[in-house]
Structure formats: structure tokens, C-alpha cells
Image (cartoon, rainbow, N blue to C red; front, side):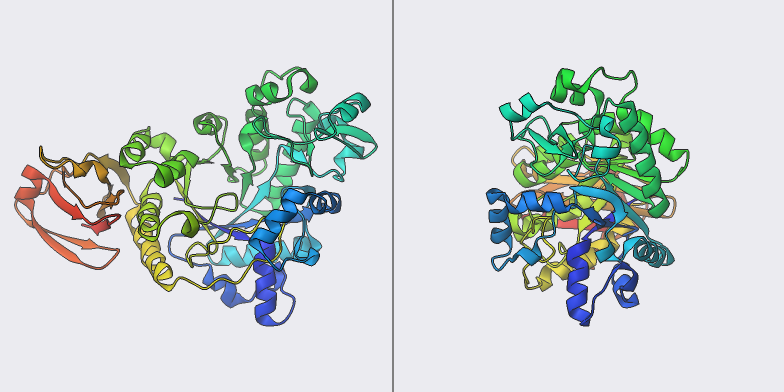
Amino acid sequence: MTVIYEINTLVWLGELSRRYGRPVTLGEVPEEVWDSLVLPGIDTVWLMGVWERSPAGLRIALSNGELTASFRDALPDVTEADIAGSPYCVRNYVVDPALGGPEGLAAARARLAARGMRLILDYVPNHVAPDHPWLTERPDCLVRGSAEDLARAPGDFIEAGGGIYARGRDPYFPPWPDVVQLNAFSEELRTAAVETLVSIGDQADGVRCDMAMLLMNDIFGKTWGDRAGTAPAEDFWPYVIPRVRARHPDLLFVAEAYWDLEWALQQQGFDHCYDKRLYDRLLHEDADAVRAHLGADPFYQRGLVRFLENHDEPRAAAVFPADRERAAAVTVATLPGATLWHEGQFEGRRVRPPVFLNRRPQEPSDIALRDFYGRLLPAAAAVRRGDWRPLTPVGWPDNDTHRALLAWTWTHPDARHLVVVNDSDHPAQARLSLPWDDLRGRRHRLTDLLDGKVYDRDGDELADSGLFVSLEPWGCHAFEW
């Protein structure tokens, strides 16, 4: 099962350069640094932000008071040299020379492959920078405006590349000031998207598609109306993905997706889609809400990406109290589907730097949290094999704390595992009816992979009454049977 480790490439290389006392680009990362990324279960590295950033977009960002205030909040001693522009304001899908260019990326990919790890990169299907070549070379790829539009709504339109274009947006927020909107209904844009993704597939093993749902016909049509023209009969991703896979059959497609459109995007060709609903329920809701979410079809769940943070979300250590983060981490790490970890998460970083910055503040490492993840990652890698099945905890008339427990099993021909999580701030007890029919007539040894404790249980009692579990607030078990 896919386990992704996201790295902010520009920040990471800057810190390596300071550590080694010399400029470090992608082609010059020391072998011991690549070795340090080989963590249990992790098979994919996402180098976020490798493409050429836009000088025009950077100028717009530097003139935006709200953005510059966010830079100071994250990095109080920020200077203009620390602001590189947004990696999602792409001037060209060519690796930035400052990061080592295409040769450096190829070397990085080879280093990862030698360690059995895949590389994924970003693709931004909804918009480009105002100095992207398409504004002059392929203007029919974009949503155009008029002089009247610009005069009426200067925040919604921009004059660039000799024309007037709509600024990029999603339907629920004001336009992004530094990007220009692509037209998902344009045949030329669809052709160009296939070309771009084939090029990315030449350089990587997978692609993370930013705000992928914005290009779906119904979403795009509601956002742009008549300005986009007539919707094609075929949706955007069913047109694009098969044509890319004709060249790169094994290219991994990951969608940043919201608004309960994950299943639709899976149907349209994506391997995995963000599971933002699970994140929100783990952070804001209770075990009943999480359990309901996990009742969805297992095939659908295998196509989700579980996470507690990424570059768009607050740092987990900043929003989850310590014990609750541990319980949530055990949950996302041991469910079916892909898992996404974010560089700095294991060390307990609390500051989420805006993606415009090439530097972040120094923060002390949370040694206890790092040790916890050091146990969780190998445990999760061992657990997630075979068939997954959610369990229903059972309580007693005078004790309904079982409702706080989440539980599931993984069954493989040569391994059995049971995960139990107390998703609450109070102790909880339950009986768990197990799905295995050969429990009777012998003792069973359960080893908790999270703390090494060993429990021996009678098989007849397990078959008749189920396994009794009792957990402290936010407590967890990851049992190897």
C-alpha cells in the first residue's frame, strides 16, 4: 500500500546547504540523507515544489499585504530573500535551475529508485503563472476576459501576455491574485495537459494533482458559466488520464480532492484521493463519526489518502493535543488506502511555513513524539497486509464507553493483526468479536507492536465472549496475533 512522505524541496535543500556548508541541489544530496528517508513502510517521496516559480507571481505576492503578513507570522525575521514565490504559480514545468535542473531531478529519482522508493511531483491543472508561455503561445488554453471585465472587476482579471485573462479561482473563495485560469473545456488545454503530464511521467513515478476536482465538467461549468464555452461531452480527467497512461501505464495519479468528490474522481481514473473528511472527523468529531466514515465500501477506502497534515493543513502538533495526535496517527497509519506523512511531522514541528518561503524557523525536536513515530511506522508496515475488516465494539448496559473505541483486523495467510484505538478523552472498555473461526482449543499470544507488551488469552473465551479491551484516554493497541 502506498505510503507517501512529502518534502518541501526548497526548504529542505536550503537546510541541507546550511548543514553541509555548501550549496546542495537535488543532484548533490549526500547519500546518508537519502538513506535517512528510507523509513519503514514509506515507498514514495513527494518532492513538493520543484518546477520553475514565476517572477511575475512573486512580484504580485510581495505587493499583497495579507500574504506578506502570513510570511512574518511564520518567520518573524523574514527578509525578501526568504520569499521565493509560490510553487503552485508555475511558470514552466521544468525543474528550477536553483534546485539542480532536470539533471538534478533525474539523479534524485535514481537515488530513490536504488532504495526501492518512487518519486511523485506536483501538477497544477487549474491555473498557471501570469508569465507562463501559454499566455502568448496558446492563449486558447485560458479563460479570457475583456477590457470591460478588467475595469469592472480588477481583482478577478489580469492583463498579462498581451491579453486579458481571468485570475485562477475555486468557486468558494476570491480569485488567487498571482495565477491565471486555464479553461478545462478547451480542446487545446486538454491536449496541452496530456503533453505536460506525459512530460512529468518522463521524470517521475507519480503526480499529485492540485485541486483536481476544479476541472470536472460540472464544477468548472458552475464556476465559469458561459465564459468557459460549451462543456465537452467527455469529462476532463477521463479524457486526460487514459492518454497519459498510454505512455506511462504505471504512473500514480493522486488527487487533492474535497467536497465529497473523492469517489467520482476515483471513477474518473485517480488511484488515490485526499481523505479530508477523515482528517476533519479525527480533529473535530468523535468515534461515532469516524466509525461511520469507515463504513464505506472497502474498494473506495483503498483509493483514499489518509493524513494528519500536509503543506495546506496546520501542523498536527499545533492542533492535536499530544495524546490525541498519537491516537489519530495510529488510525490513519493502519487503515486501508494510502498514507501521507509530512516532513517535520515526526519531530513535532508546529509552524507551517507558507509555501512561498524558502526558509522556516528553527524548532526543537519533540523527542517523545519522534520515538512514538519510530515505533508506529514499523508497526503500521507490519499490520497492513491482507484483508481489512472493521469491528463493532460491544459494551454493557451500565457501560457505554465502548462507543469511543475504533477497531479493525488485518488478516493475511501468514499474519493476523488487530488495531484498537480509544478516540476519546476518557477510559473505554469493550468486547470485540473477532473474525477468525479457529480460535478455540488453544492459547493465543497478542504482542502490542506499539509498546512490546505481551498478552496471553484463552481461545474458547475469545470465541464465546470476544476479546476484552480496556484503554486509557487516547490509548491504542496494534496487536500482532
